[in-house]
Length: 187
Image 1 (cartoon, rainbow, N blue to C red):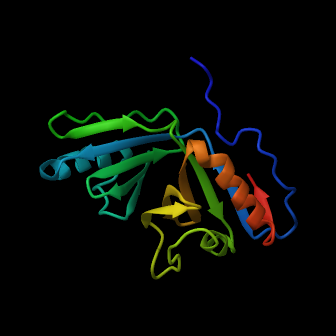
Image 2 (image 1 turned 120 degrees about the vertical axis):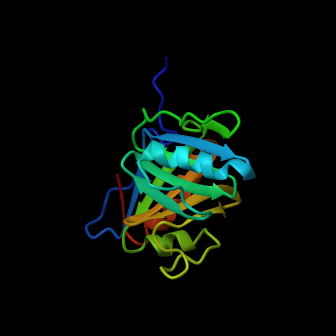
């Protein structure tokens, strides 16, 4: 099997200035599995997905739950994404009558944005109110970044953007270019 590479592999990044207020990170490798259910099987499929990551229950729409093996994001009314920085997390075993699991690991690029000015940076691009009262940690939203559909997840330490792999380089370049005015460090 070929060794997979991040879509951002080899991207040039600016030197980190002293006092950088934004940290960008290409989280790679990782695993991403979509779990879909039908309206009458939501509870059962959600329980299977929650158990897979070590949570007591599945999150409501627009929210995330963090467990010992990763996080479970409710990205749509009938869908969750199970995401983990561990690339070897297996998809949940869901009975055909309850739902379906699909590996999306190679379809997305995971970009983490943190630091004092991360909200300011993202507000250049996202049509969302990212203040704590409107989008607190644990929130998930499907939104658009420069006309590209992405999933945004607010973690305790910052924001995670799950962007389509084919748009990762251009969106990364926009983030880097815009963040340079605030001071940027890249991990």
